Length: 125
Image (tube, rainbow, N blue to C red; front, side, top):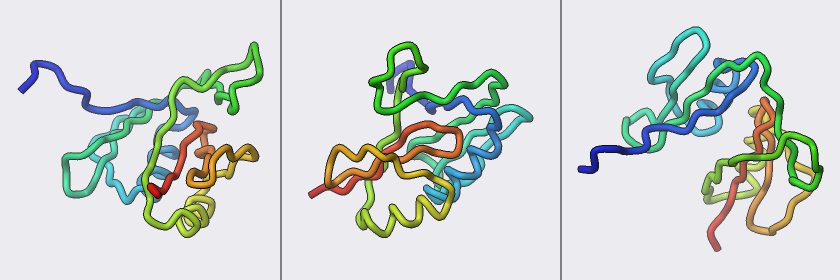
């Protein structure tokens, strides 16, 4: 085993608990640990990739696509593989995601989570 390993990706938001709740609903994750300004979520069976959320009062949502110089640019995004792209698109919107106006690929849907982070649902052809 390597002496180091990536344990989670942390997303800043104005409200860590609100964003964690969204991703728990979207991904079927559960809360693994929490503090007043931080939450860790992951698959209910353990293991897998976790996500953490940290409250940042000065959080500024990124812009996407990144064609607007001088504004907060996207630094990362989550790719979430799905079997039913249309069905999961409808479910993501129902859970609080916003479908982006710019959709560059037929097998990918770009969204914004409630804090404005871009993420993609995609289907392998």
